[in-house]
Image 1 (cartoon, rainbow, N blue to C red):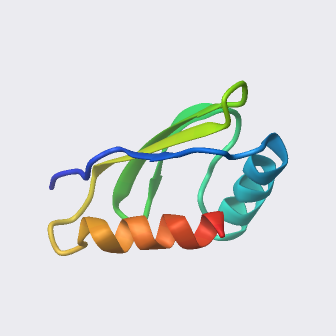
Image 2: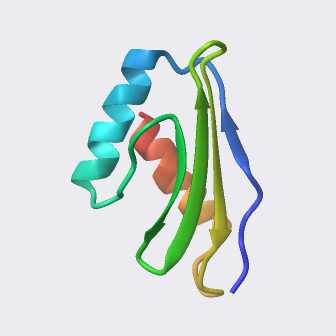
Length: 81
């Protein structure tokens, strides 16, 4: 298994981040707080949200070889709306 490059999303308000957490939790992701790590469907993720500048960094650290990074990024972008 391998990971993907870290993704950075800018201009994310605290309200939008809170909404993202709710949506992700509804999808089965165990996300809470401004930083952490979780596993989802055989993939490992870490994230860090900086409310002062509105930046969210997400890193898929491990994934199955048959899951392309661009598919993971598309899903995350869809969650961000």
